[in-house]
Length: 274
Image (cartoon, rainbow, N blue to C red; front, side):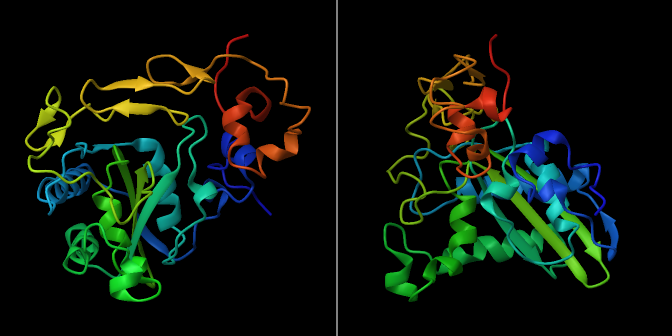
């Protein structure tokens, strides 16, 4: 099988099943997200986040991420509506889980995103969706909670018009974690980020804390895990760890999601100090 040019070593080493290693469908007629549509996507998401009810105290202003957009675009060009596996959309070097919304058949981006955000009519903050929507209730509100998660700082999307329909994909850094409490409720918007508040959202300019670092949305600074350093937690503190290559053989890099984070040198997932 011919490997597509998009399947570079960084993706293939992560997993041979990475979305960037998929062949594009032969049904693609046109694809891509224009500069105008990028603005529509960002404005729509941030509007939904600003107007969320009950009031959110810790939602970030979203910015665009070209890396996760590349992967979203690749999935859209499969001309099929489905979610790829979480590991198949990971960005090597980011060390962060990626969330995702998909849609098909909508006439344009505004209609696709409206379908996601309209789930707010069903959503009940603080309650288990299975309790009020039945088993699998999260499927009926998960697109909306993705859009208003306090774990998300960037979005990147892809589009394809195919012979069998239109396909829309948005990927998010990071993925949502808690649908009951996607953000922190309070009495004043962005009250947890007085220093960075911008029209109801915490504006850190889309800053990310890589490799599971924690972002302080008030000061816009990162607290890194003990394995990483730099202002954005992007570099490993040590090239090698005693576990890597010993207790953790190299084949674990593709088998367990935590190993590329703990053994970036062995797994080739990010720059390290010599």
